[in-house]
Image (cartoon, rainbow, N blue to C red; front, top):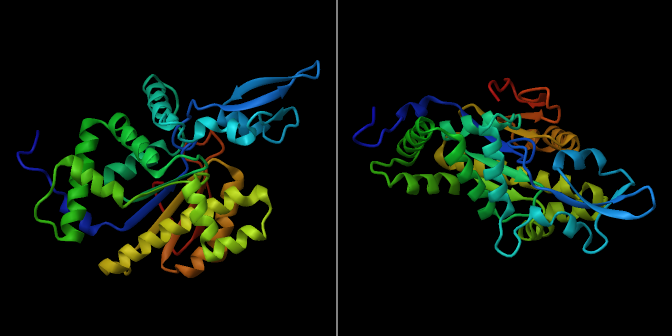
Length: 308
């Protein structure tokens, strides 16, 4: 039954505060985006090949594979950045969702993102890709359109209006499009190999020093650290402004890369959990596809975070 006036779920006022940080590829969706490499053949020649992200995770240290000699790693990951107006992420997200619709198993955090959206909770996408924030946001909008049913989208809008009334004091609301725009403007979309993001990272006083003392191989992991810190600080300042820091607060992070999971877990234990003592952190390793929701590897705080 449709409501004559937009439904506003004021029951969100009694909820605790749960926020989420998601990696995208092979965590939310198994994307069809290919990495361009060269493979060493039996006759000693190098043959151009394209591999999936999951395959690359297995062979990236294999000496029988290398980046294209013409263009290097920029060429290898050409499809993972915005290219002359063609945004591969958006088109490949549509393709990945179509495969899910036809029965392919999605990434282990697919349902967690759906639940996050339905409940209208803030979240961040942190990916090793090189797209602009606006491109990642477009992919999320595609996810909302195709992964959520009409009823789930109505539930999301009801919750979003509820948060606006309870915490912003809103008495009137814009259209669904305007309210969705407002919601997504409070989320974060970071591709850690994007040029603008890297400029921010390299000019940050703390991470400038970390980068100078790190190996090149650890730079992507440091970039994810920085993106996670950015979201946690955003949430903290927002809650402090609204006077809500006395409520239970938890932040979950999920990633299918074991190296990222290890780095983020250590970062939470050694830095974030000490700086933000009132926030509960959960990290999920989603590298094992046999586990539907991944494996909890790090928890800080007094309570466990259920349902993630």
